[in-house]
Amino acid sequence: MFGYILRRLVSTIPVMFIVALIVFLMLRLTPSDPAAIIAGDNANAQQVEMIRQQLGLDKPLLVQLWVWLSSLLHGNLGESFFFKKSVTSLIADRIEPTLALAAFTLVIAVAIAVPLGIFAAMRRGSLLDRIVMGFSVMGFSVPAFVIGYALIYVFAIKLQWLPVQGYSRIANGFEPWLRSLILPSLTLAVIYVALLARMTRTSLLEVLGEDYIRTAYSRGLTPLQVLVRHALPNAAVPIITVVGLGVALLIGGVVVTESVFAIPGIGRLTVDAVLARDYPTIQAIILLFSFVYVMINLIIDVSYTLLDPRIRY
Image (cartoon, rainbow, N blue to C red; front, side, top):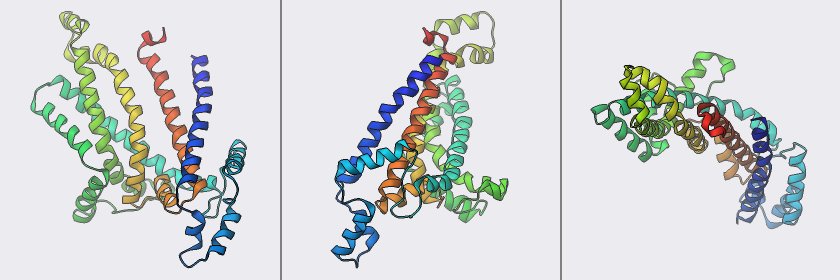
C-alpha cells in the first residue's frame, strides 16, 4: 500500500507540469493584454509598453516560462499583477471561506443524498422513488446561480432568516459563520445531491439483485441487516467514486456561488483575476485546484482497497 501511494504521488509531478504548461500557454496566447488593463483606457502605447516591461511580458515566451517554473520550484508563486502582493498571501487570505463552503457542502450533500438513494432503492417504483428521480433531473437542469437567487429571495428577503450575502469568518463566532454558509452550501449541494442520490440508488439496486442478497434473506436476516451487512459495503465503491467526481463539480460551482453570495474566497478571487488578466494569480489557482483534485482521486483509490479487499489483488 505504501509503495502504491508513493507511486501515485510521484506520478502527480508530470501531471502538474503538463497542467502548468497548458495554463501558461493558454493565458499567453490569448489576445488580451494585462498591461493595457492595468494602464487603463486613457493610457498611450508608451505607457502600456512600460508596464509590460515592468511585468516582464516583453520577454520571449520561453524566458517567461523558465522564470515562472524556476520560481515555482522554489515555492514562489509570484506576485499578482493586479493586487500588487504575493499570490501566496492572496490565496492564504481567501482559502478559509472556500474550504468551509466546500466542506459544509459535502457534509450536507452526503447526509441528504445517501439516505435518499437508499430509501429510493428499497422502495423501487414508489412515490418516493419517483420524487428522488425527478429531483435528480431537476438538480442537473437548473443552473447554480438560479438556485442561489431563488434561495436568497425565499430565505433571506422574504423570510429574513439568513443573511443575503457575505461571509463571516469563524473567528467572529460560530453562529454568524454557520448562518453565512447555509444558503451558498445549499446552492452547491442541490446539484451534488442529485448526482449522488441517483448513483446510490442505481448501485444499490444492482447489488440487491445479486444471489448472495437472496441467500441472506433466506437465512432469516431482516432487511436492515441485509442492507447494512451485505448491500451497502458492496455498493460503496461506485458511491465513493461519485463523491470524488463531485469535487470537480464543487470546484466549478464554488466560482459561481461565491460570486452570487459575495463570498471572498478562491472562487471570487478567480473571477477577479480572470477579469484583470492577472496571469500569476490565475496560474496559481488552477494549479491549486488541479493538485487538490489529484489528491482527492488518490484518497478515493486508496479507499477502494479498504471497502473491497478484492481490488488489492
